[in-house]
Image 1 (cartoon, rainbow, N blue to C red):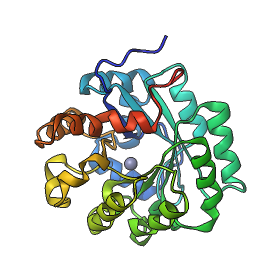
Image 2 (cartoon, rainbow, N blue to C red):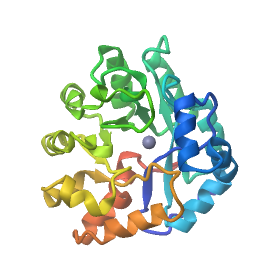
Image 3 (tube, protein in one colour):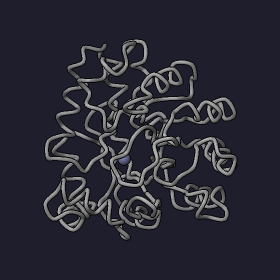
Image 4 (cartoon, helix red, strand yellow):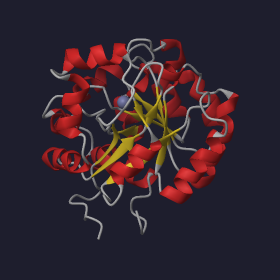
Length: 287
Ligand SMILES: [Zn+2]
């Protein structure tokens, strides 16, 4: 029986990375070792099981998390769709998020369709700066068409990445304008809001296009009014994500900081999960 969400609307974290990857590139490994003593192995021991992730969600006040696959071997670890499916199996609070890489797969659109229809994946994540393609690459159009038809949202990494080898030019949110225009019924989440040089691009897209949002993972919530001067008008397009794992207490702290922004209560509830629940169709039977 699915766990009942404790808050209504639920608190939904749309951006977590389970530390279960293989193929750790040396630059990424060095980054992890600097940040966490013991690096990738320590993270996997601490958080590499669904039970540990759920315990952390409980400690943070999160009802559901979107668990991201990641297949960009040039710059980062490989967490396959199969790994994510296995990780989330039998855990209704862990929502599997697929990835495709248009330069590694022959038929990325067909792959996405199978993952959603046969395996219950709830969203798609793309990593242009890690995988070296623009998000409006025509190879991705059949993928967007499938996502739009099946009604799943797509998260696209925008802005900088700390992983060595990432290429920033692919991270300009402006390329998503094409996608938003050509797929008006596809929900697009700009992860990290184009940090740190394209906040204005991300904000403009989110305000112009009804189908474009900002996943605020990786952005300290107390800085949002500085990054987005029109925060009050933009707030309904913001979606909470944590980019976890991170230092202990950060997810809870970020949720508290969002509540402290002084936005209307219903807007805050939408940022923390109401909007994500709608986009991910959590309220539907079987959700
Ligand atoms: Zn991330």
